[in-house]
Image 1 (tube, rainbow, N blue to C red):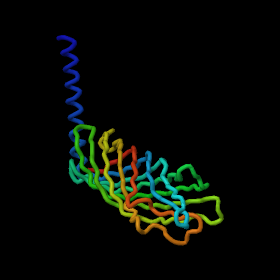
Image 2 (image 1 turned 120 degrees about the vertical axis):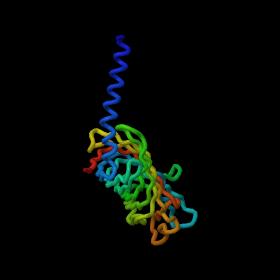
Image 3 (image 1 turned 30 degrees about the horizontal axis):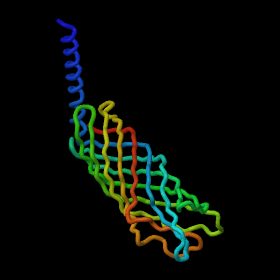
Image 4 (image 1 turned 30 degrees about the vertical axis):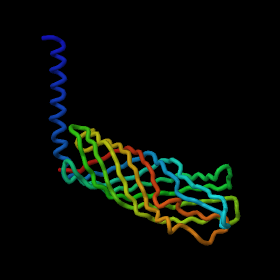
Length: 227
């Protein structure tokens, strides 16, 4: 028997053993509850615009810097190809202010909390699964802005409707534990017409547009409960 044939048989036997172990894993995960913890990065976009109260004042654009994020998920695998999931995530990015070459000594941060209800569409075989998530929920923005004047600028912070889409991967470590990596994009409806418009002494900040977008890249561990 040649060494090439021996190597081929060994590889075939290894693949068969993996398939035998992975098949029960896939079957068991139907009708299972999944609890996940994750962390990663958050990348925001422009969220506020500010202008002096007097007509024709300079416009200041407020962008959201990248930061870390963390969160948790609770899911239910209805069947092999489909599941549902509720998730919460939080981030605390700093804000950057720009208006051409002018600066106004303004700075701040914004706490972000996201709450999502997602439909999960699974695909793939063996111990590596991919998935596509589509969901709705709400995002809560709580901005803190300070400047060098006696009277701080005003902002408006509250919760807004949001939607998201995600593409991810699950790698099974054993029947109950999996590693999960995901990219997610989220857009929030800021209801632009409700931005701050009165009581301004130095700057007023309103939402820059009707939609605010952010990207997230996360990884974490999931534990599955099943019989």
